[in-house]
Image (cartoon, rainbow, N blue to C red; front, side):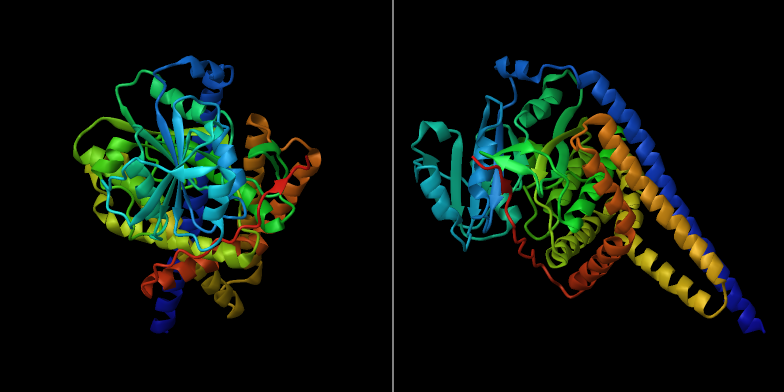
Length: 477
């Protein structure tokens, strides 16, 4: 009887823990959503009517180098570079780093952009794999383009090569498969032109899903909801993360992550902290955390900005195989960053980063899939053994499902109330339908991929995983 009593007590404690965890997760999401909504309203009020093109007249506008690493991107590389070169801005150049591609990427670049070898000397301020050649275009139309051809060293190594060669004080690091809005640099540059007593060390922007969108001449001409259901669900995921999440973290000055697909950095600080870490697959998050640590530890006033406008469009995985590789890598990258910077955990020296941001990422981003799966399996087992009723199990499941669906609807509403990129009612219904299905066909897989990432990390895997591209839909001429 004593053993049964203790068992019942342990079960009760476990149930309370799972319920408390679920409640705090939902509460944190709602809290962040409220802060994001307030911040977004303020941002739109300040910036909606600003004539960004007038910034083109500013001679003192920040000089920016766009660094785009490319590995086996032959399918989309020409369109992507045309997109980068067509950006409305004066003080910028585009540095494409061919990271030892095994496909025809380099051949396409040489032919499409009339490349010739540059006489400029490459200086490795940050150690990288061997750089073979540096190219520029003999065609004046592509005068802003620089191509670095180097041995394969991974994305972080390629980004470091681009940072090394950059002559400008700011570097915008992007994925080469991205399509960037023509006014992206104007919006990113604006915070640097505004007076502030804090140094802006990094700026992030919203990334959206480009699958099924129409692209012409490297420009986005029509936004569509993806035809592929898996990509469509990722639209919801990105809306929740960027519109209802990162806006709040920027307001709290606790942003730990700027998307590797689209982030601008103060090159001087990047060089001082040693550039991107080539030993992690989460180089984007790790660099931001390391830069913030550097500023904190040297007691230098700084801030990290976030631009909520849809500035960058990328191709999302349309198969579970590719998605699994991506999410497994994200998990391993998070694990590595949290471990490297474990000194920050609950350390008041790092203020909100150590007391709020780090614990949040540890509990609700990294540990959440493990806790969620464990709780689900044990709750199911207790229902099966009759310890709890099936009615309670069903009600708990319905409650969690309803919250997930409601939160996705909130993200859709936030998009439609602000930037309204999806104009047709049909597209909105497609997103709502995806929100209904997501908890059954997407969320369980992301938990599986996160657990797989843990296992791969334990086994010592450092693999990036090939991200096979389908290519963008092109509008007929």
